[in-house]
Image (cartoon, rainbow, N blue to C red; front, side, top):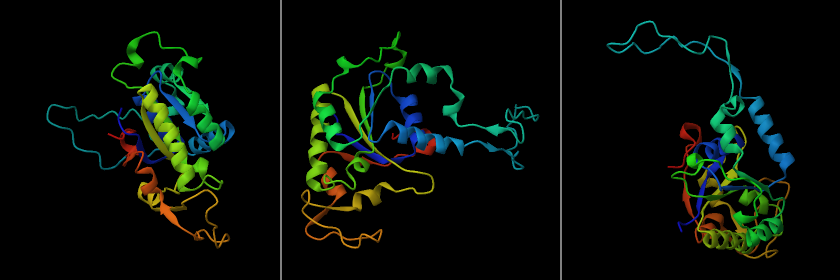
Length: 247
């Protein structure tokens, strides 16, 4: 089994596009916040996606053998919608066979991982091999750090306990594992920034100073997140806006 991969933060739409384009049955997506919050975040994001287009004035010259009468399928001033809103047949077919679980707390996530099995899923297998060919099943966790943040589990001890449960579950099933944190619009947190953030060693083992400041420091012994998760996973930068792939 490959080591779990911790990828760059992604918008909700980038996450869904990536799964629809690169994953099939019986991949399972674990969203680490409530269904209402997730649907609200993606709705707000996609509502801002449509925009009026303008025809480019510096289109490339046609190559030899090509017609000089270039036909642009998008009319000037037309509204361009996000691909998730267009609902092509393949996208609809794939989405019906992706299992989505919402886990609102760290306790829920650990409990679910301890008993997780594809046999208990009510999501049907696809009628053909089109959605499974050359695709390894994955457990994709969206919001692993977010779920722990601002709780008593926001520590090296808490993060390690959950990470070990995730690795154990993936090993038991022989599934690949991806961890992806959410981001929103211009508030783009780079992967490197997340990994440099520090947390206390033990649950309740330190106290935060300067709670009225975004950069309040911890008292007591601390360690950065990269060092904690580096024991359980490897890190990889993803170019979500280009190919929705981490390859």
